[in-house]
Image 1 (cartoon, rainbow, N blue to C red):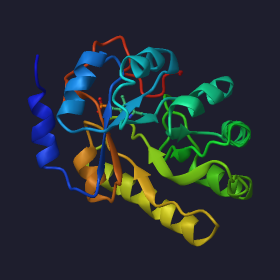
Image 2: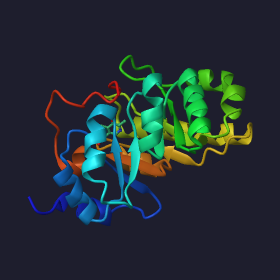
Image 3: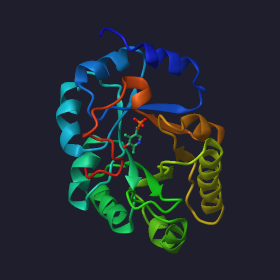
Length: 229
Ligand SMILES: *Cc1c(COP(=O)(O)O)cnc(C)c1O
């Protein structure tokens, strides 16, 4: 394979104000290079152990921005901050506070999104909206970590109009929190291969695409979006 035709097709139809993040879990560095050559500069991984050798293999591509999107255990906070300028999957307060301490120590300022679970889904991590409101003052106290927005992953099985309505409720939650706290939640990381047009219609600022860019992944690896880092 010398090019990825699906990438230019999707890029052409993509609104320029939405950041297209290529999700490269299970994808080899040589293929990631093709996506880079096609113009993609934002890439995401969900498992630290898989990601680190790939980041190393691609370190000559110095203008890539790497995003971490997988469930993260607190003991891996330091490595993730060292390698990923963006972390989309901050899904509980102790993790956020750990990231804050490590960021202060390293004098890094990671950009983070808080992961929200809008609908009950046993396979997914994230704050419920109520849980987020009740943690608000502790969240606002973070200074090294730059809290930029909200992220969500929808459960399977929704109709397109339910998907769009659920994404719109994330947008509304971000607006309410921004009005009623010191947080400025301007980023909405939402939309994957199966639902990204609905996410864009609801105001997504960052869309995370894997399969529509690179094809189906092998069934055993990385499908489960909440997998351990
Ligand atoms: C795998 C993954 C994606 C991309 O999913 P596709 O269906 O391949 O587009 C997006 N977000 C997260 C958190 C993921 O783990």
